[in-house]
Image (cartoon, rainbow, N blue to C red; front, side, top):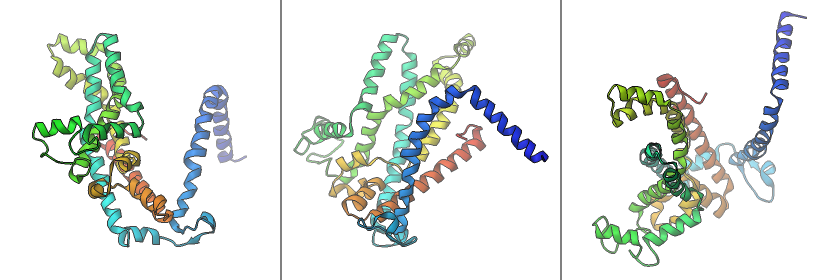
Length: 320
Protein backbone atom coordinates (compact mmCIF):
# COMPACT_ATOMS: atom_id res chain seq x y z
CA UNK A 1 0.00 0.00 0.00
CA UNK A 2 1.40 3.41 -0.97
CA UNK A 3 1.85 6.31 1.47
CA UNK A 4 -1.02 8.16 -0.22
CA UNK A 5 -3.42 5.21 0.23
CA UNK A 6 -2.32 4.77 3.87
CA UNK A 7 -2.89 8.48 4.56
CA UNK A 8 -6.36 8.30 2.96
CA UNK A 9 -7.23 5.21 4.99
CA UNK A 10 -6.15 6.89 8.25
CA UNK A 11 -8.27 9.92 7.41
CA UNK A 12 -11.36 7.74 6.79
CA UNK A 13 -10.75 5.87 10.06
CA UNK A 14 -10.50 9.20 11.87
CA UNK A 15 -13.82 10.41 10.40
CA UNK A 16 -15.42 7.06 11.22
CA UNK A 17 -14.37 7.31 14.86
CA UNK A 18 -15.77 10.85 15.09
CA UNK A 19 -19.12 9.72 13.66
CA UNK A 20 -19.31 6.70 16.00
CA UNK A 21 -18.41 8.81 19.03
CA UNK A 22 -20.97 11.56 18.26
CA UNK A 23 -23.61 9.42 16.50
CA UNK A 24 -26.41 10.93 18.59
CA UNK A 25 -25.66 14.41 17.24
CA UNK A 26 -25.67 13.13 13.65
CA UNK A 27 -29.05 11.42 14.22
CA UNK A 28 -30.44 14.75 15.47
CA UNK A 29 -28.99 16.46 12.40
CA UNK A 30 -30.48 13.96 9.96
CA UNK A 31 -34.08 15.42 9.80
CA UNK A 32 -32.72 18.88 9.00
CA UNK A 33 -30.44 17.48 6.29
CA UNK A 34 -33.38 15.60 4.74
CA UNK A 35 -35.56 18.73 4.92
CA UNK A 36 -32.92 20.78 3.10
CA UNK A 37 -32.37 18.04 0.53
CA UNK A 38 -36.07 17.64 -0.28
CA UNK A 39 -37.36 21.22 0.04
CA UNK A 40 -34.35 23.41 -0.78
CA UNK A 41 -31.98 21.53 -3.10
CA UNK A 42 -34.31 19.20 -5.01
CA UNK A 43 -36.53 22.08 -6.30
CA UNK A 44 -33.41 23.73 -7.74
CA UNK A 45 -33.81 21.42 -10.73
CA UNK A 46 -36.76 23.62 -11.66
CA UNK A 47 -34.33 26.45 -12.49
CA UNK A 48 -33.93 24.69 -15.83
CA UNK A 49 -37.22 26.37 -16.80
CA UNK A 50 -35.29 29.65 -17.20
CA UNK A 51 -33.50 28.13 -20.22
CA UNK A 52 -36.59 26.59 -21.80
CA UNK A 53 -39.63 27.76 -23.77
CA UNK A 54 -41.85 26.14 -21.20
CA UNK A 55 -45.03 24.51 -22.42
CA UNK A 56 -47.27 23.17 -19.60
CA UNK A 57 -48.43 20.19 -21.67
CA UNK A 58 -44.82 19.12 -22.35
CA UNK A 59 -43.23 19.70 -18.95
CA UNK A 60 -39.86 21.27 -18.19
CA UNK A 61 -37.64 18.50 -19.57
CA UNK A 62 -39.45 18.11 -22.92
CA UNK A 63 -39.92 21.83 -23.61
CA UNK A 64 -37.63 23.43 -26.21
CA UNK A 65 -34.21 24.60 -25.01
CA UNK A 66 -33.76 28.31 -25.83
CA UNK A 67 -30.46 29.11 -24.11
CA UNK A 68 -30.24 32.63 -22.66
CA UNK A 69 -33.05 34.15 -24.74
CA UNK A 70 -35.30 34.52 -21.66
CA UNK A 71 -32.55 36.49 -19.90
CA UNK A 72 -32.06 38.66 -23.01
CA UNK A 73 -35.82 39.35 -23.08
CA UNK A 74 -35.57 40.49 -19.49
CA UNK A 75 -32.52 42.71 -19.90
CA UNK A 76 -33.11 44.15 -23.37
CA UNK A 77 -36.41 42.84 -24.67
CA UNK A 78 -40.14 43.38 -24.34
CA UNK A 79 -40.01 42.90 -20.55
CA UNK A 80 -36.98 45.13 -20.00
CA UNK A 81 -38.82 48.23 -18.80
CA UNK A 82 -40.92 46.36 -16.23
CA UNK A 83 -37.95 44.25 -15.13
CA UNK A 84 -35.54 47.15 -14.55
CA UNK A 85 -38.26 49.12 -12.77
CA UNK A 86 -38.85 46.14 -10.46
CA UNK A 87 -35.08 45.70 -9.99
CA UNK A 88 -34.65 49.39 -9.05
CA UNK A 89 -37.59 49.30 -6.65
CA UNK A 90 -36.30 46.11 -5.01
CA UNK A 91 -32.88 47.63 -4.46
CA UNK A 92 -34.25 50.95 -3.12
CA UNK A 93 -36.76 49.31 -0.76
CA UNK A 94 -34.11 46.88 0.53
CA UNK A 95 -31.56 49.68 0.99
CA UNK A 96 -34.04 51.83 2.92
CA UNK A 97 -35.05 48.78 4.93
CA UNK A 98 -31.40 48.15 5.80
CA UNK A 99 -30.69 51.79 6.74
CA UNK A 100 -33.82 52.34 8.83
CA UNK A 101 -34.77 48.80 9.84
CA UNK A 102 -31.41 47.35 10.90
CA UNK A 103 -30.73 49.70 13.88
CA UNK A 104 -34.21 49.40 15.44
CA UNK A 105 -33.86 45.79 16.75
CA UNK A 106 -30.44 46.72 18.19
CA UNK A 107 -31.94 49.71 20.02
CA UNK A 108 -34.77 47.50 21.28
CA UNK A 109 -32.27 44.92 22.54
CA UNK A 110 -30.34 47.62 24.40
CA UNK A 111 -33.62 48.90 25.85
CA UNK A 112 -34.63 45.42 27.02
CA UNK A 113 -31.22 44.82 28.57
CA UNK A 114 -31.67 47.93 30.74
CA UNK A 115 -34.97 46.69 32.22
CA UNK A 116 -33.94 44.98 35.44
CA UNK A 117 -37.42 43.72 36.38
CA UNK A 118 -37.91 40.41 34.58
CA UNK A 119 -41.73 40.65 34.55
CA UNK A 120 -41.77 44.10 32.96
CA UNK A 121 -39.12 43.04 30.47
CA UNK A 122 -41.05 39.93 29.39
CA UNK A 123 -44.24 41.97 28.98
CA UNK A 124 -42.42 44.54 26.84
CA UNK A 125 -40.77 41.82 24.75
CA UNK A 126 -44.08 39.99 24.25
CA UNK A 127 -45.78 43.13 22.95
CA UNK A 128 -42.98 43.73 20.46
CA UNK A 129 -42.85 40.05 19.37
CA UNK A 130 -46.60 39.75 18.68
CA UNK A 131 -46.70 41.49 15.25
CA UNK A 132 -44.24 38.89 13.90
CA UNK A 133 -46.83 36.14 14.37
CA UNK A 134 -49.58 37.97 12.51
CA UNK A 135 -50.15 36.92 8.92
CA UNK A 136 -49.43 39.30 6.07
CA UNK A 137 -53.15 39.43 5.32
CA UNK A 138 -53.87 40.62 8.87
CA UNK A 139 -51.03 43.14 8.73
CA UNK A 140 -52.31 44.47 5.40
CA UNK A 141 -55.86 44.72 6.76
CA UNK A 142 -54.60 46.79 9.70
CA UNK A 143 -52.61 49.08 7.40
CA UNK A 144 -55.60 49.63 5.12
CA UNK A 145 -57.86 50.32 8.10
CA UNK A 146 -55.44 52.82 9.63
CA UNK A 147 -54.71 54.62 6.37
CA UNK A 148 -57.70 54.21 4.12
CA UNK A 149 -60.77 52.51 5.60
CA UNK A 150 -62.83 52.81 2.46
CA UNK A 151 -62.64 56.57 1.97
CA UNK A 152 -59.85 59.06 1.48
CA UNK A 153 -58.06 59.96 4.75
CA UNK A 154 -60.56 58.32 7.07
CA UNK A 155 -57.97 56.11 8.78
CA UNK A 156 -56.73 57.32 12.16
CA UNK A 157 -53.09 57.46 11.01
CA UNK A 158 -54.06 59.30 7.83
CA UNK A 159 -56.03 61.81 9.87
CA UNK A 160 -53.08 62.30 12.23
CA UNK A 161 -50.64 62.82 9.34
CA UNK A 162 -53.00 65.37 7.83
CA UNK A 163 -53.44 67.16 11.19
CA UNK A 164 -49.69 67.64 11.67
CA UNK A 165 -49.37 68.81 8.08
CA UNK A 166 -47.41 65.82 6.81
CA UNK A 167 -49.82 65.12 3.96
CA UNK A 168 -52.20 67.52 2.16
CA UNK A 169 -55.93 67.25 2.67
CA UNK A 170 -57.57 64.71 0.39
CA UNK A 171 -54.38 62.68 -0.16
CA UNK A 172 -55.08 59.03 -0.81
CA UNK A 173 -51.99 57.33 0.65
CA UNK A 174 -52.85 53.88 -0.68
CA UNK A 175 -53.25 55.14 -4.26
CA UNK A 176 -50.22 57.48 -4.19
CA UNK A 177 -46.90 56.03 -5.41
CA UNK A 178 -44.70 58.40 -3.38
CA UNK A 179 -46.05 57.07 -0.06
CA UNK A 180 -45.75 53.36 -0.83
CA UNK A 181 -42.09 52.86 0.16
CA UNK A 182 -42.35 54.62 3.57
CA UNK A 183 -45.58 52.74 4.25
CA UNK A 184 -44.03 49.39 3.36
CA UNK A 185 -40.79 49.95 5.31
CA UNK A 186 -42.49 51.30 8.47
CA UNK A 187 -44.92 48.36 8.42
CA UNK A 188 -42.01 45.93 8.06
CA UNK A 189 -40.13 47.52 10.96
CA UNK A 190 -43.21 47.36 13.18
CA UNK A 191 -43.77 43.69 12.29
CA UNK A 192 -40.22 42.34 12.62
CA UNK A 193 -38.21 44.65 14.90
CA UNK A 194 -39.26 42.97 18.15
CA UNK A 195 -38.66 39.44 16.90
CA UNK A 196 -35.30 40.38 15.34
CA UNK A 197 -34.16 41.88 18.64
CA UNK A 198 -33.95 38.37 20.16
CA UNK A 199 -30.57 37.72 18.56
CA UNK A 200 -29.11 41.06 19.68
CA UNK A 201 -30.57 40.71 23.16
CA UNK A 202 -28.89 37.30 23.49
CA UNK A 203 -25.61 38.88 22.34
CA UNK A 204 -25.91 41.62 24.98
CA UNK A 205 -26.72 39.09 27.71
CA UNK A 206 -23.63 37.04 26.81
CA UNK A 207 -21.29 39.95 27.62
CA UNK A 208 -19.53 39.43 30.93
CA UNK A 209 -20.88 41.73 33.74
CA UNK A 210 -17.26 42.05 34.94
CA UNK A 211 -16.55 44.36 32.00
CA UNK A 212 -19.38 46.70 33.00
CA UNK A 213 -18.22 46.70 36.62
CA UNK A 214 -14.66 47.51 35.56
CA UNK A 215 -15.89 50.46 33.49
CA UNK A 216 -18.00 51.76 36.40
CA UNK A 217 -14.95 51.61 38.68
CA UNK A 218 -13.12 53.74 36.11
CA UNK A 219 -15.98 56.29 36.19
CA UNK A 220 -17.66 55.31 32.93
CA UNK A 221 -21.24 56.42 32.31
CA UNK A 222 -24.06 54.61 30.52
CA UNK A 223 -23.13 55.98 27.11
CA UNK A 224 -19.54 54.80 27.55
CA UNK A 225 -20.78 51.36 28.64
CA UNK A 226 -22.64 51.03 25.35
CA UNK A 227 -19.76 52.42 23.30
CA UNK A 228 -16.83 50.57 24.87
CA UNK A 229 -18.40 47.33 26.18
CA UNK A 230 -21.77 46.57 24.59
CA UNK A 231 -21.04 47.35 20.96
CA UNK A 232 -17.62 45.62 20.89
CA UNK A 233 -19.24 42.60 22.56
CA UNK A 234 -22.02 42.55 19.96
CA UNK A 235 -19.70 43.17 17.00
CA UNK A 236 -19.45 39.55 15.72
CA UNK A 237 -23.25 39.17 15.88
CA UNK A 238 -23.79 42.52 14.14
CA UNK A 239 -21.38 41.58 11.34
CA UNK A 240 -23.00 38.17 10.75
CA UNK A 241 -26.50 39.65 10.76
CA UNK A 242 -25.61 42.45 8.36
CA UNK A 243 -23.98 39.95 5.95
CA UNK A 244 -27.18 37.87 5.98
CA UNK A 245 -29.25 41.03 5.53
CA UNK A 246 -27.16 42.11 2.52
CA UNK A 247 -27.60 38.63 1.01
CA UNK A 248 -31.37 39.12 1.17
CA UNK A 249 -31.31 42.63 -0.28
CA UNK A 250 -33.01 41.55 -3.48
CA UNK A 251 -35.44 39.20 -1.75
CA UNK A 252 -38.27 41.53 -0.84
CA UNK A 253 -41.26 39.32 -0.02
CA UNK A 254 -44.12 39.47 -2.49
CA UNK A 255 -47.05 38.78 -0.13
CA UNK A 256 -47.42 42.24 1.43
CA UNK A 257 -46.40 43.95 -1.81
CA UNK A 258 -49.14 42.20 -3.78
CA UNK A 259 -51.72 42.88 -1.09
CA UNK A 260 -50.84 46.59 -0.84
CA UNK A 261 -49.90 47.71 -4.32
CA UNK A 262 -52.14 48.65 -7.23
CA UNK A 263 -51.78 49.94 -10.77
CA UNK A 264 -51.27 53.51 -9.50
CA UNK A 265 -48.30 52.51 -7.32
CA UNK A 266 -46.45 50.12 -9.68
CA UNK A 267 -43.88 52.86 -10.30
CA UNK A 268 -42.48 52.54 -6.76
CA UNK A 269 -44.05 49.31 -5.50
CA UNK A 270 -43.41 46.65 -8.12
CA UNK A 271 -40.43 44.53 -7.00
CA UNK A 272 -38.76 41.46 -8.51
CA UNK A 273 -40.82 38.98 -6.51
CA UNK A 274 -44.13 40.63 -7.50
CA UNK A 275 -42.84 40.89 -11.10
CA UNK A 276 -42.13 37.14 -11.09
CA UNK A 277 -45.58 36.44 -9.65
CA UNK A 278 -47.36 38.69 -12.14
CA UNK A 279 -45.44 37.61 -15.24
CA UNK A 280 -44.83 33.97 -14.32
CA UNK A 281 -48.06 32.89 -12.66
CA UNK A 282 -50.73 35.44 -13.63
CA UNK A 283 -49.29 36.03 -17.12
CA UNK A 284 -48.56 32.36 -17.77
CA UNK A 285 -44.94 33.04 -18.87
CA UNK A 286 -43.18 30.78 -16.41
CA UNK A 287 -39.86 30.81 -18.30
CA UNK A 288 -39.50 34.60 -18.05
CA UNK A 289 -40.52 34.45 -14.40
CA UNK A 290 -37.97 31.70 -13.76
CA UNK A 291 -35.24 33.72 -15.48
CA UNK A 292 -36.03 36.80 -13.37
CA UNK A 293 -36.01 34.74 -10.18
CA UNK A 294 -32.69 33.10 -11.12
CA UNK A 295 -31.19 36.52 -11.95
CA UNK A 296 -32.35 37.73 -8.53
CA UNK A 297 -30.82 34.71 -6.77
CA UNK A 298 -27.45 35.06 -8.53
CA UNK A 299 -27.12 38.73 -7.58
CA UNK A 300 -28.11 37.90 -4.00
CA UNK A 301 -25.44 35.17 -3.93
CA UNK A 302 -22.81 37.61 -5.28
CA UNK A 303 -23.80 40.20 -2.66
CA UNK A 304 -23.48 37.82 0.28
CA UNK A 305 -20.12 36.47 -0.98
CA UNK A 306 -18.83 40.02 -1.49
CA UNK A 307 -20.05 41.20 1.93
CA UNK A 308 -18.55 38.12 3.57
CA UNK A 309 -15.17 38.74 1.86
CA UNK A 310 -15.09 42.43 2.84
CA UNK A 311 -16.06 41.58 6.41
CA UNK A 312 -13.32 38.95 6.66
CA UNK A 313 -10.73 41.44 5.39
CA UNK A 314 -11.84 44.23 7.75
CA UNK A 315 -13.01 42.57 10.96
CA UNK A 316 -11.87 38.92 10.69
CA UNK A 317 -15.51 37.93 11.32
CA UNK A 318 -17.34 36.11 8.55
CA UNK A 319 -19.82 33.37 7.77
CA UNK A 320 -17.14 31.08 6.38
